[in-house]
Image 1 (cartoon, rainbow, N blue to C red):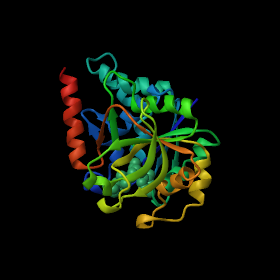
Image 2: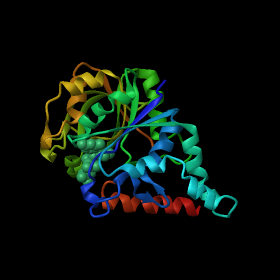
Image 3: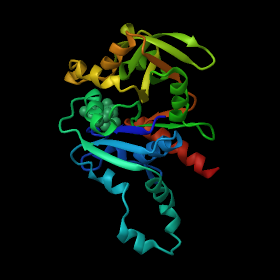
Image 4: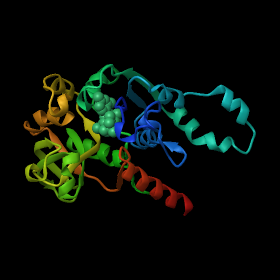
Length: 276
Ligand code: UTP
């Protein structure tokens, strides 16, 4: 039912400068695989067959990564190194890639609206590739969310409990637990990057969403908020006030690879996993 996954990938990645000066943040590797490939594999595992990527200036490496490199294929064919390409070949063969550019970086909400041309009028998934998620042998976080979408039929945000003194980094929700076994909350309010004393809870929105197409009109009606950017949290709040957004506390690990600390933790996590 959810065929398309949108990847907003136009941000500057300033927390990773100078690495991100000429290299997209989404192409930074955890072990040998760029962040965005983990995201695309997660979307495929959730049943998506179209990856809609919102890029910006200096992000061409993303398109090249999801394309065939004939020269490299020719060089490596029949050698012991060929298996290194097998995963990416499988990814390229199992879905379609579409791209559009966000010309001005006006925030995540604006990036998602820029992707409307690739999505059309249907519900879709969103993955922020710098939030790297892993649920081991269990269902991927996006797969869990697609199942919840089939059950609840409205927009869904992924939630994670964070320490109270870290709420200033996230969109934080206010909501009511409506299904304890599914870990589902009906959202009534959301605050973008609140100070501790203003945070309505310690449940933070992380980089996985399932959005109904009504989000596009909601974004169009959203005025620039914090930092002059069009925040997806503000647009979602308009839908939440109509009772049309739920939050899902997912199962699995999540690493904030947009920060050096989270990136190192993810690298150690996947390295240890690869040694098992
Ligand atoms: P971040 O808040 O992590 O911003 O964006 P950033 O620019 O990537 O990184 P820092 O904070 O400067 O280090 C969250 C997600 O939204 C995308 C980013 O690419 C990232 O996936 N985004 C953000 C856009 O696509 N466009 C924007 O205008 C802003």
